Image 1 (cartoon, rainbow, N blue to C red):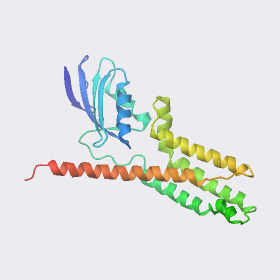
Image 2: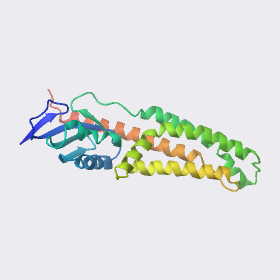
Image 3: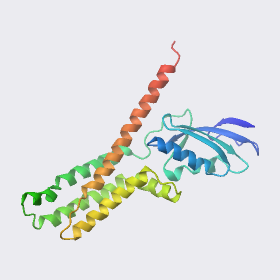
Image 4: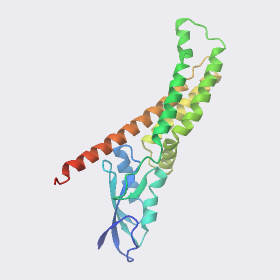
Length: 232
């Protein structure tokens, strides 16, 4: 038999299949809901899972003979998804996306202002020793900024790789790491170019789109709720 219970309820009798309904935050695209479902269903004892990206709600059928509620939900945390009860206060921004976006955007703008060194040679200008110190300044600005600003992306990419389920964060992390590695190689090779601004631009674009997407999605959900709410 199946019982409908809210998250973190009192233990059910042994052998009972319970259907838990809860919220899942930290999703940034529809594929995140698919991945969250696969992670839940891969846990022994979870017989079925459904995750809705738009409303950030989910349900899971859990056989308590095989696993506990806590262990079933724990598989989502390493991938960067957060479980919360239904009906509670709206979850804010545990990843602090806005300050991370500000840091990445400032680093990208400052690195771009120094990027004239790449184009001066096209117009016959001699860059001389400026090339080395400008590259060093770019690296000092960008590398620590991206390491902190994009930390949630890197953590989730690593978790998804360990789970054998690479996603969008994997591509973003590889792009930033590859651009940084190529830029360091170009910095030390005399005839090569470096583009330290690229990792910061990728980080700022990804964080900005996530912030915008989350605000639009939640505004849409609130608007839909207002439409179906009974009028007095």
